[in-house]
Length: 198
Image 1 (tube, rainbow, N blue to C red):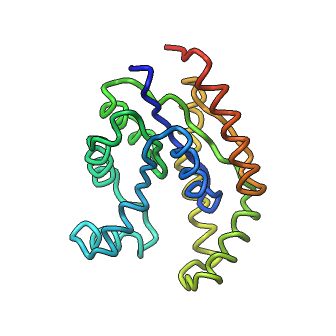
Image 2 (image 1 turned 180 degrees about the horizontal axis):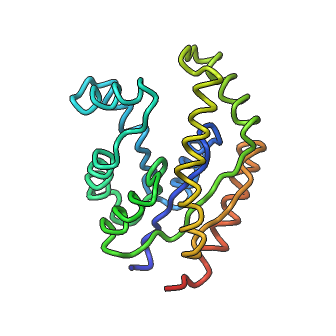
């Protein structure tokens, strides 16, 4: 791996503020923030065939299948702006996707994984408020809590896996945007400066 490559991932429950922080981290390290959610939404908005497939899946409350997500991420990581590194948001979501990503990276791992932790009730309250402000009628408390359960069920094994690899940076996701950004910066600086165990 070249010294200039910074390969990062941000994970955390829906509504923990990943999107906001992802933009700041990407800017700080000079890498593109790659959000599978943004890619899906752009395709839905553009009315592409992919967008129509994804929309039907999302409307049923399910997650987009691994095969489709892997394909989209592999295509995005092959683009020139990701050569010097990237920040992934929303992928990988499960252990199978981690192994697919390892394959895309020629067997080398991510440099660091930021885990934004947030209390479920606080996140649900935040998302209900956002739904009200943005007029998202489908974001009911039941739907939001279901997404939190799916996240916890699917992502817990990832947290364990990244922890064993020695690349996990756990950050309290509650507080002001600046407070959380400062915590992430301090955690990443410490992790990226430390030698990675092979």
